[in-house]
Image 1 (cartoon, rainbow, N blue to C red):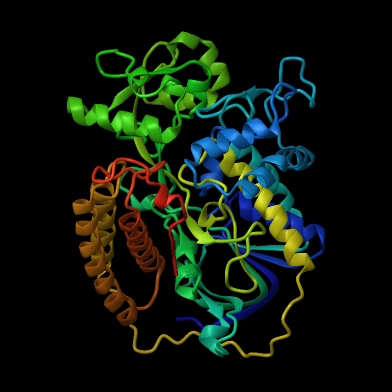
Image 2 (cartoon, rainbow, N blue to C red):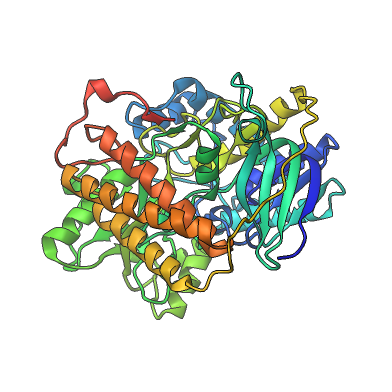
Length: 532
C-alpha cells in the first residue's frame, strides 16, 4: 500500500449530492476552504436522479400554512412542527438561490421568470412543485457542479470513500465532549489511505436504498455516512421509516428507474393487470394518496392476485405526456413502451429514508463540529413519512443553515496529532465472493422481512441473521485490508442492524412503518425512536 498522505482543510464535506454542493458553495462564498470527498462522479447520487422537483409556496392561492399542514399530515404525527415551518418558509429563498446559480426550471408558456410552472404530487393540496421537466435533479446538479468546479476555494476528490471519522473520543477522550477532527479516507483507485484533518466535518452521503433488493437508488447509496456517524457516537432515530416509492419501472433492463409521482399529479392512474382502477378502495385521493398508502395498496394487490406488477396509465394525457415528461418517455420508448399509448409496468421500491443521524435545526449532530445534512440526517421534518418533493427543499435549506452556523461557530484550538492509519496484520483480500454473497443476503433479507409490510416474527428472524452477518464481517474487516466493497458491505450491515432495531422497538403501525401484529397507531408511540 502506498505511503499515507495527510490533508488539512477548514471544511470537509463527505458526499457530493445536492446538500454537499449547496453547502460547499455557501462556504466558498465566505472564502472558506472546502474539500469534497466523493465515491464516484457527481451523477451517482439520488439528487442527480431526482425527477419530481422542489416543493415551495410560490402561487398566491397557496400558503405556508397549507404546505406545513400537508407535511404534518404526511408525517403522521411525528414531524417537528418548528422544523417543518422553518423549512417550508425558506422555500422561496432556495428557489431564488438556484435561479441565480443558473438552474433552468420549467416555466409557463409566457416564459417569465416570475411564473415558473408548478406541478402537483401526492399529498399536496396545491400545485407547488418547481421542476425542470422530469429531470429536476440533473438540472440543479449540473448548475451547481459548474460553480463548484470553478471555485478557487473548493477542492474535489472523487473516487474516494470515508472509512471512519476521527474524533477526540478515539484520539484523546476527556469524557466531557466528543469533537470531530476529520476522517480517514480511502482512495478507491490507489488503495492509499488519506488522513484529513478539518475544523468542521459534514456528512452529506445520502441514503441507503441499496439495503433492499428493489430500489430506485443508485449503486453508491449504501448508508456510509449513517454507519460512520453511528460508529463515532452519533444518535440515530426513526430508521424504521423507509419510504417505498410506489412506482418504479418494472423491467429487467431498468430496475432502478423511477416513474415520477408527478405523472399522477397530471392525471395518470394506477390499474391492475385487468385494467381496474383500484386506488379508490384504499384512499379518497385515489392515485394521488400519500406514498405509504399507495405503496401498501400495490403490495396488497400484488399479494392478492399473485401478479408481479401493476400498471400506471398515462394515456389520458395523450401526446402531451412526452412534452411534460421527456426523460421518462424516452427511457420507456427505448424499452419498447410508448407511454402515450401504453400502460407503464410498475412496482414499489425502496426510495427514501425518513430516519438518520439526529441533528438540530442547523444540521449539528451530538458530536461537536460534525454536521449531517440531507437524507443521512433526521431533523424532524419528515416524521413517519416524507411529503413528496420536500427532500430537495430540505437539502438546500439545511445546507444554508449549516453554513450559517458553522461560519459563526468558534473553532476549537486543538493541538492533537492525529494518529496514522495502521493496517496491522491485515492482508489483501482474496475472498471477494464472500462480500458479494453477504451483500446479496442482506438485500434479500431486508426486502422480505423488513419491507413494506412487517411482522414481529419476520423482524426477529431478520435481527438474528443480521447479527450473524455482522460477526462474519467483523472478522473479515480485521483480517483483510480495506477496499471499497468491504466498506460498503460493512456499512450496509450496520444500517440493516439499526433499521431492524428501530422497527422492533416501535409497537404500532404509523406512516411508512406497517406491522401486521400492531396494525393501529398508538398514542404511546407518538415519539421518535432514538437509539445511541
